[in-house]
Length: 165
Image (cartoon, rainbow, N blue to C red; front, side):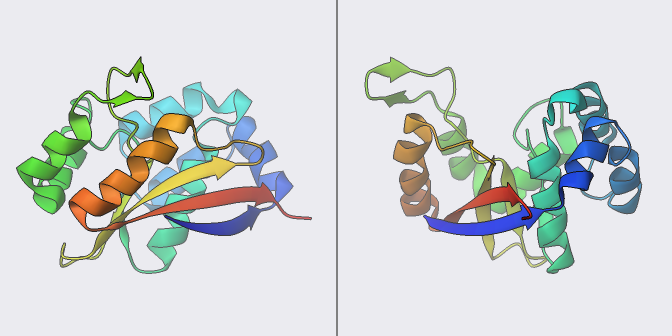
């Protein structure tokens, strides 16, 4: 796993929590963010939920990548699910959605990374897990992400996102 450090302006998170950012980002990047994503972001913004994932998705978009945001394998996001299957193949999707056991605790599902980032040709892809401020990888994530890299032959990047100083 590769770890990178990025920062955001404090005022941007404040405006996110007030619901002032999401609609603009959604309108600018409609190919990336769905109406369902916008609804979730607006409904959960007061605590800053989804800010890091949207901020980092836009970071990779500006670098020329395509991004499938959170819940890319969930049935409530059929277009993202279809694209993820195209990128990962049936075996890759099956691997990511199987029930896993990590250190004795059974999880309902594997701890998938937040974002699936890919190039237009679909041949190059990687996953991104976003951790904002004091958030850290869970034990299941620390155990599962190297397995993703091995089985799917791709990188899992952990982005540590902190407020600008």
